[in-house]
Image (cartoon, rainbow, N blue to C red; front, side, top):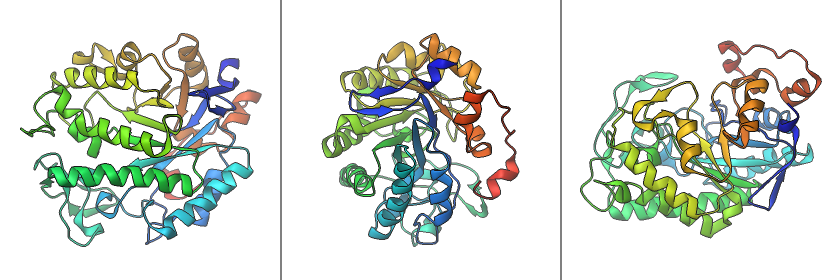
Length: 346
């Protein structure tokens, strides 16, 4: 497993001390003003031995909130709170990216004063808000062109805020059924304007966000997470393949820090992708790719050796084992993750 502990450069500018990344893990532990807490400072600092920490998903503006106590990155207080996190991570020799998030149609007006929930199209999802099951999802409002322009600007501003907060870069959350991903799938985007209907149009908003963030903070500090396989609050549609074929070809022209496979189970195959999401993304993207999906150190190392991806993101095992990197290096047994660990920061 020596390849996991080799240093690697992201886009020739940011050097990671190893290939093990901490995956973004929503923990709902910010305070009521969505400011990171001291418990979060301690939580991230304990995991600074990873090559890169990707923060929990962090909302770019109030109407992006879909879960309780998820941190923000749009007020001075939130920026200052994150600065305490990043300072401690850096003091411990680590690096950290902020994952920028807007939940789109799975946001809830309970969190932001009853304003409209925004999405590509007025298509709701069934169910209720996790941890607050008394709140049923509402039918969103289809965003206007002007609101799309505002969202693009707000993503860019959040990236600027992230650097002010001490982050080394950002990962744009374009996966898992949230706002950017909603533009990329036919089951959630039925627009008939320049943002819907076919691949180039459906990729227009995601690419605009990427380009705005790159302009604001640079390619070397900008990453993106994608989930071409519709599986979370999405209905699969074979036409989605064309959208992601186009999007990945466009991203290949850019030189981002990395792309991150946005699906938790790498054994999950999609007929219209011709295999797993990792396989599909690797076949269509030759630059730095982050794999995720229940890999062990052994299977992750093998996947890196085989060129399936370049970096390994670890999720739940890093909740259970803050000293994951040290244990893997020493060949020590890892603590098994259990759902009870979600009840508190460990």
